[in-house]
Length: 386
Image 1 (cartoon, helix red, strand yellow):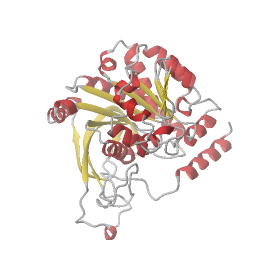
Image 2 (cartoon, helix red, strand yellow):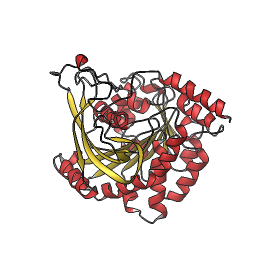
Image 3 (cartoon, rainbow, N blue to C red):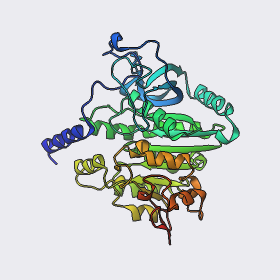
Image 4 (cartoon, rainbow, N blue to C red):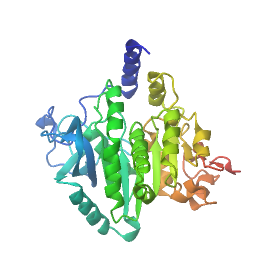
């Protein structure tokens, strides 16, 4: 594909994504205007995010980690304020000085010296929770994110879905620019060792459960990190994972199959969220020479053959690239127990499947969800099919 055609596709992607103002900042940004800020406003809720990042440290506290690649991991905690004006599924960010009543904003930022201190802080956070909430949710963001974008996204995801987990975020050095897709793909490959290191750290924590979630190009980071651990014989971090979810994976199907073969035994449950309505992945496929992406819904049978559960979100709340974090249907299902580890394992008729199969459609939109388990297909509309 010519440079001109790639540029045209990226401009189309820019149009689809919308042209907003300046990119998100954690707090007082370079474009700030104090006149528009209500200094008395308070956030409605605060979500602590424990961050490990392969971004370089910056002296600019509006974005304390930049787009350059760091040879060593940096660690921090960011307490993210959820604004009172927040609408579920959205991240109300600004490139100006955030108003805590209207915008996501950091209320505290604490860097840590090293991984040892980071692990100590994780264990302290876990110990402060009830036994049934001593869980880590590790999120890996996708393409075109700056540090504030991705940190806020995890805070929104945790808050809106009602997760009771200690939130851990791996921030890899995306350029945060639509025109730098190639830079991001190179950064995703660069970042795999950092995520592998983070998984080793997290595996030594006192968490009872560890869930790993990757989105878009971040799923490439996830798969490469798991592959790196597997081929180096470090199986303990993989064995400690109690679930992996890849949302809208922007990975070439052939590459993914090689990764699965190299990893060998996958963590269970292992789920992939796909959508044929994902325009960003359709554009990604065209940019990369017409090769299908794992998240575009064209390779469901391959995923099932590899023992992977598939959630087809094509008909759920628009099936967009960010539907995993923005879907009211998924939020309601998760909060009511309709999507659990047992459901994705395919262990018989679970309470979650009973909710999904309820003919009275107690959850609006649930009838559009299709779950492909490794040995069967489950839909809310048709019930359980062998």
